[in-house]
Length: 415
Image 1 (tube, rainbow, N blue to C red):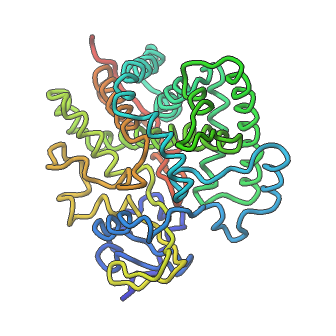
Image 2 (image 1 turned 180 degrees about the vertical axis):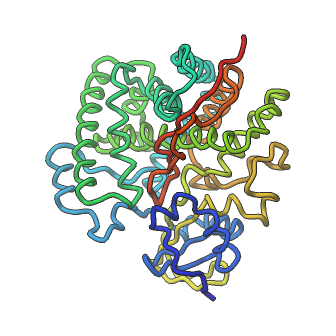
């Protein structure tokens, strides 16, 4: 029984703080068909988990870009085909057999052991960025810390020179923005041209690594052979490097670090608790991911008629599994809207998904969050918005949860 008012989750004002709307949906219609789009919003924890755990019934092969009113314009397809390579589906938006083939490779890059070996690099990047603050007591946190930290790390792991990093912000935005489903046709065309620039950059790097292999992920991607002995072709390599590694490897972590700092501005009580017991850093990271899930929702498509949460679904129906809503479900998380460093199962949220499509880079993202806040809380204190600073705003997106800017004032702690 649908009731819910005419609130539209495609409205940037609703996206700015969707949690009140999510609460109404969970209470009245945890599987709710949006009249504006026809998508079914899945907001309850149990029904979201039920859908995710049936990946053959609720398929992942849905491109948000193709859901625009005009689909993917031929002009965009022509830009890719004439100047680069038409991107394939990412690992997270594909199904077997492509998903199996790509995930098998990616899983080998982000094992717990490899993340453990990378931790000194991760720690050093966090410290280096704080060193870069110098004597300043105000920074723009997204630009000066939250964005460069995961970008430096994934670039180092891929084998991209840090001297080229500034170019990657515009390129990474161009990959991610069309997935928001909130950009104009003109901007999507501009994004396609920027992504082709990025593709050509990586094509040159691929040619270089074929001549001179190195100890980096780019070389591993080139040298990888599937179980049948097949290598990735150029279109696959370009998609893996630009979407699965570079964009997916930094944008969501930037979002989590930024939102984590905003949460601590709003409720600084956990700071001293973590300082007294640094082991709670891991719980802090999990609470940040739960409260401000960087991927607010992912699409699924019904492969056949089904029932979910008492709602009849037809083959072809689209679901948007709203992780951001499920992760604040009071039936699963007592006092769901606040940081609780002592939850019985702190990682029992859906921010990374579960099962076949659980985020392949989850271990790396968690370590980056832990290292970031370990360094920030050890070296800085008295976090606050600078006087006169505007309230932080989130970029309009149906998919993500990215702060545009976060002006931050602080004082340096004594060594």
